[in-house]
Amino acid sequence: MDIKNNTANIVSISRVFVAFAAIGLLFVHTTEAYIWALVLTIIAFIMDGVDGYIARKYNQSSELGSVLDIMGDRIVEASYWIVFAVLGWLNIIFPLICVARAFTTDSIRSVALSKGMTAFGDKSMQSTSWGKFICASKFMRISYAVAKVAAFVLLIFANIPHLSVGLQYHVMNVAVVLAWIAIIFCVVRAVPVVLESGKLFEK
Image 1 (cartoon, helix red, strand yellow):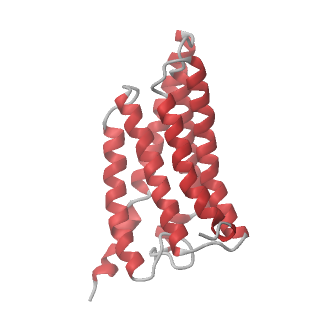
Image 2: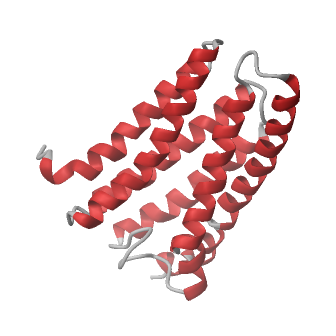
């Protein structure tokens, strides 16, 4: 592999392992482990923006990059939702919605990819202005990312061992509200993909 010309793809793949390291630390019930999990979680999501920046700045955008970026997003996001449910911090409905949404949209996008379309960019499968806004606009993508990252970070923070009960209670309440906002964004951003998928199956 040409490392120089695949830096963005390497970052996309690497952040999955950074997230896995953070998640693994959540099962080590010490304050130090949770602080490191918090730091690594933040780094993993910063890397999500870095790979796109590198791809645009150094002209490394490609269909493979688009697939790796989405794949990384799915693995990281679903892993956190699942682990939070396993740890009892959130209801099981969160990972169920996340996984169902991922299978639905990615199945449709795989068909789009076979026809030369991508999820985002100039070859986006979204043809309507509202579809492009909901799925690909900076406002929607950033809003979703902020709600998701804030929810994940606060969920971890609220469960740091030996945190005061009062602080834990208030932070956890905010985290759960943000988690609901994030999962609603998750569903809403899938709507245009489903509604505009008809054209992919026309003969």
